[in-house]
Length: 184
Image (cartoon, rainbow, N blue to C red; front, side, top):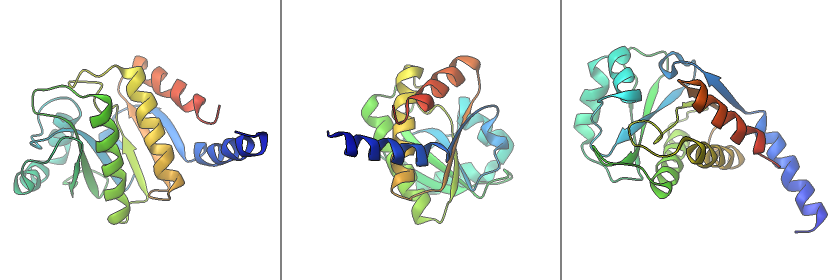
C-alpha cells in the first residue's frame, strides 16, 4: 500500500476511534439505544451476560426470545429490552447452547448484530466480551475481533457509537489494547 493510502486508512480509523469507548462496568446499566447479549443459538437467557439481562430486564425479554425460537450460530436476533434503560437487546448467537464460540461465529454474529442495529434505527450500542465468558473464547482474540467488527460497522455508518462494557480488569485491559491498536 502506498504512503497516501496508508495515511488515509489511519485517518479513517482515527475518525472511527473517537466513536468507540471501553468501559469497566455492568452492561445492563448502559445508556445506549441497544445492548448486545452474548447469546446461545436457542436464545435461552441462562448465565453470564444473558443471566444479568434476564434478571434486570424481566421476563418479557425471554418471552420474545421464545417467540423467535432457535437461530443459527453466527446470526443475531433483536427483542425489546424489558425493564432495562435501553430500547432493544440484540442477541448475538456466537455458540450453541452449552457449546463454545470460535472466531467465525464471533465475527458473523457481531456483523449480523450491527446489521440488525442499522435496520432498527439503533444509533448507539453497548457490547460485552461476546464469546469470552461461558463460551470459552480467548479474551484477547475476542477483543481484536469485536473491535474490528465495531470499526467496520462505524465505517459503514450502521451505528454512530459503540461502547464496550467489560466486567473484569483482564477483559478491560484486552479490549483497551485492541482499541489502542486501531489505526496502527
